[in-house]
Image 1 (cartoon, rainbow, N blue to C red):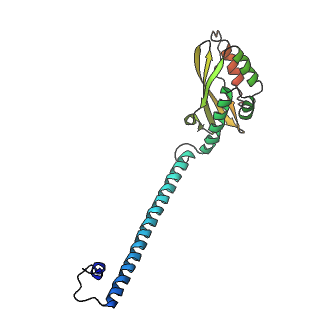
Image 2 (image 1 turned 30 degrees about the vertical axis):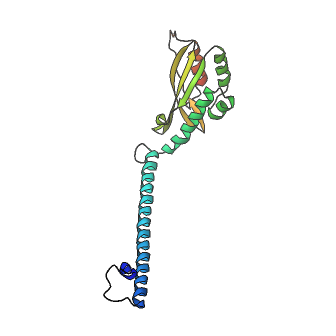
Image 3 (image 1 turned 135 degrees about the horizontal axis):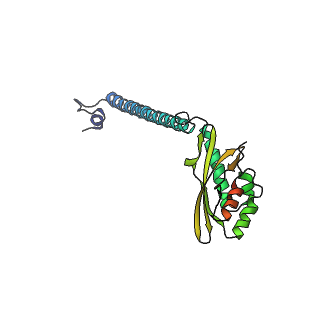
Length: 200
């Protein structure tokens, strides 16, 4: 079998002529170029479909996050609110005076109260804000922070609600003691110190 027969894919009926060899080589090169173009177009189509799929998924996810599909809109505010709530929680846990001032509104005296409570053995061990609990409800942006407080080898878990306004967190009271309250004496003090929410 000759090279020409391999290129042509068929048996030659006679001795190959030089023109026939040139023609077969040109035909092979043309076929290779066509095949490369075909594969390039197929790859381009796949790439465009992938980009289109990513764009459609992004539109769906962003619309959902933005409250256009679920919720009542403006949910993009939840992302910076959660970031601020997370930073505020870390500042409380780390007793970071600068962080408390930066991330919590009307925090005057909060650091001093936390320091005083810490000297009494009341220690915030874990404070965190969960993005899943950051929500927009009737145009009011709610956030929640969980606090784990240790005192005399006892562990207390509190949930503190708040809102994000003007780039800072405003927390509500952890607990409002009622008449005849007989719980820990430090709890109303901690709740009052953290409560920086101003309904006005």
